[in-house]
Image (tube, rainbow, N blue to C red; front, side):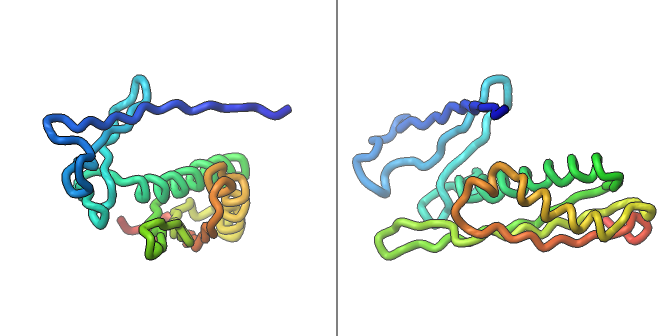
Length: 161
């Protein structure tokens, strides 16, 4: 039986004491993203688009969503397949191509998870589970660009932080 899940956020932007969108250079890009009962996320546009570098931008949040979704599926699959993960780190990158008219789109995201498992965990199976995690990830299944996964599995006795 299919299930439906709904996610609600509140996005807030205000001109504050400024002149609103009277001019392209004049309005602030700062805004906040809120979910009831959770800390707000300070957001802005990318600095390339006159945003605040100290705030998260939508492009970073998209890459983070893909990385987080993959990790959560991966940990679930490891737990149900006898792989004991001790540490999971990902240095994900996304590439967006901007067109001459200012429109743009992501052309790829690469996830590079580095996983540390216990010495008695099956490293081959641990690596293979990334394919299953990618196939099951809700976010990766929803985007129209490639999401590539290049994983590295380490034994805990070789782990260095």
